[in-house]
Length: 418
Length: 141
Image (cartoon, rainbow over all chains, first blue to last red; front, top):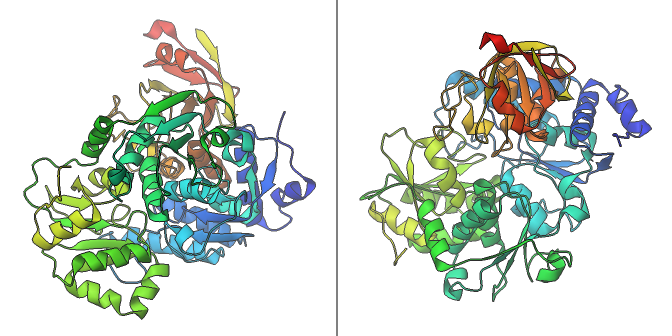
């Protein structure tokens, strides 16, 4: 069965609402045809990952849409760009790239997208309701949107995200459909120490293991004796989605489509049951670090996904007003920066040696100083995954507390056996 | 002559080039340098190979949703493969070609072919028809 467009959709694709809107509709329809969808469905919102500069062609595409008179027809928040437009941090992009990256960010604003510039839109007031059909980009935002909010999106990438936002449509396949959202793998953590599970440092480790073992299948986590809070689900999803093609996970008793294991599995016996052992955890934790025998660190990076206000509170209370020996790059969005500035916390943090990075982050654009052999410490599983290739720094993974203590002293400080 | 019929995923002009069959999944973002068209992932078995102008046979794609951006960049720079042959359709990657076509740039054809057939094409000079017929002159190798 082929793709069946409505007469409205066909008219828009033919140019009834301008050449920009036509281009967007054709891109969505062509993708739908390619993936075997039989129709397009209306969406309620979009989160756009496409405004991050990878080369001039992406800027030219966005400007073509603007020139064609296109605007978004649903709420569309923007993921990070390549440039910190707030001026909090500076990057080392060459002049041409800097110019094209800024032009790209300007074009996406001109299309009507909100200048949120964050990979945590779900903490910046963009929270689609349970069951809502949306088109979200950025792997961590996608997995949070599907898993924690229970809204429905596929993993939208560059170009398709904005095309969906303009047309207000998405191809009807994959995670948009109920039958594709049930878990087929059980990820049982009941054998792990409850004290470890209730610490923030556990969740990127679990996410790394989950992403590598489960990939693009859908799993349900079972065996937790407490209800995980939002920032640890955020850290879990981000790490899982960087280690594997994870688009949706469930947590029995905690996430909206998983009141219990059987419901998460759609009352069909799971194809696989993984019992997570302490040895698997120890191995996953080792994989998050690439630096060997580190006797110093050069920087700390936190905030992938972007830090919430609560995470800044925890940073401040761990710092206890101490001056840092090496900088902490703290990545966040304007939704948090505005409050930090209002409360004069930005200046206080900066006076201690914290570098606040807004609108972007340290693994997507060159902010960290070039330094052969340098070591970056992080509490983010996603930074740990991407930093070696994207920044040239090797990484050490630790808890937020360990990151702060290490930044104060300039040498790696670990609280206990890791 | 030997001929293999593939399904046309995205239309494009007939082309010709030396077939490069990848032997491991690839992430275009981080795995292919958009400026040089070289496979840039040091852990990939075909590391250092140039995909520009090749009949590129891709068993599986993995990784970032920015793959389309890299492919569009290759098309824009005139360094795209002559044809892309996938084991299964991948919207994230092929969006690069869908957008390139909308931009009016010269886009390679995209085909679907079972990956079990990739090895027999590897290294050969392969001709691709606009209807998805892959043929190579066996005697030349």
